[in-house]
Amino acid sequence: MSDQNTTSQDVIAGLGGASNINGVENCITRLRIPVHNESAVDVDALRGIDAVLGVVPGPTMQVVLGPGVVDTVARDIEARLRDAESEPSGNGDGVAGGAAAGSAAGAGSSSAAGASAVGRGAGAGKGAEGEAPGSPEDLQALGAQMKRSQSERKSSPVRAFLGRIANIFLPLIPALIACGIVAGISGVLQNFVANGAWPWAAGAVPVLTAISSGFMTLIAVFVGMNAAKEFGGTPVLGGAVAAIIPFAGVSKVSILGASLEPGQGGVIGALLAAILAAYVERWARKWAPESLAMLIVPTVTVLVAGALTLFPLMTLAGWISTGIGTGATWLLGTSGGLAGFVLAGLFLPLVMLGLHQALIPIHTTLIAQAGYTILLPILAMAGGGQVGATAAVYLRIRNRALRNTIKSALPAGILGVGEPLIYGVTLPMGRPFITACIGGAFGGGFIGIFNQLGFATGSTAIGPSGWALFPLAAGNHGLGAALGVYAVGLLISYVAGFLLTYFFGVPKDLVARMADEEAAAESAVATA
Image 1 (cartoon, helix red, strand yellow):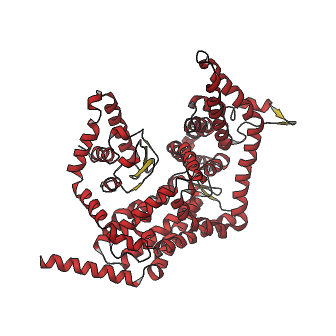
Image 2 (tube, helix red, strand yellow):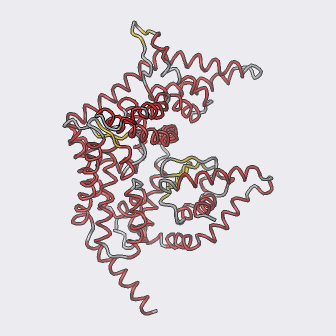
Image 3 (cartoon, one colour):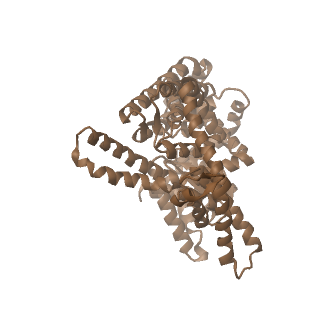
């Protein structure tokens, strides 16, 4: 059995079995799996799975696996869930039972380690009350406690709403990434053709442009379908209402003497239109006779929501979308260095609080307007600061267990998956998290300065950061300039995060305690 199959079994078992899973989706790095009963999930067992880089508990469990692996595991889990549904009811838990057996056989040592960490929870409690944790196990337990605390705080209405917004846009990320990379290839070929080189590419450019642009032309429809589903409506009705926005014929509709423009309002308009359609549909279902509901409900939904979309919503959403683009450009154009410093420095705390999800529609709007978002490369610097900070912790603290944790989490951090480093290393230690934020701020400030000087650096898609963002880099001075600015900014984040943490971020008493623990462990092994 492949590693991915074993991982799928273990994940299903950790989630409480197939019967506790209510579907599976994934973004570029993590599984997003709604569960029926959150108390049935064994979070420690999930974290103990070898391929799992991190777990974010909640009604929708997030299991971080990293790029590539997450796609394979998601498909395998979907197949196993389909198999479980097709089995007779008496064997409905077959997948769960098999997965549990696989977990016990394939991940026994990991489970034991998780149980050991739980058993030491009392010792970690001191760290939570203000005393610095004194061992890698304390750090892991304290990090897990912080994650649980953040999960509980995410139950507020605002965070719940932001989570729903994220659920609308996250399924679109693979297409955004693919189209962004194809658009980048098309742009490179177009530059060569314009300079008289590679004449053979002249025929390929229109083909690649069509492939990369088709999705963005109709992104409003996909946003509408996902939004309607998330807010309790019928996806195709949400898509039908949102499809009004890119329709060329809206140019013949005038409001107060001004004609509408195709695409006016963009994804913001599509989001609002589809949410409105979901509420209209639910209202119509309450009074429509059951025998005529099939005719009345969709007709009323499309007619009412469509009319409201054409008149107030497209105009309002157009103002909002234009304001987002103008505001971001003005901010980075007038105070780019300071704005980049502040945005990158605050991004890790925003991720902890779940407030970064509010940026998803903003990124998507900027991509629809300019072809790239100028905010994402700046925010990505926060992960660079954390990578540098973690490298400094690795060199300062000579403790084998902590170093093994860092070695397993650092590659994911370099690729832009920062959660294992946040909750496994920097945040529980306290100071390294602060120095990581400041280190990332320096990188964000550097990119912001170049934006202020007229060299805009952006990303053609959302989702990736770290090294994974390089294939998606774009800018107003060509691919080479964008890659160079981003690369130097990332290097500055690494170096600043490393130096700040090495000299100021690691308390000397913590270094001494972990060194003593390592010496005691080596002495015990030698005595045995």
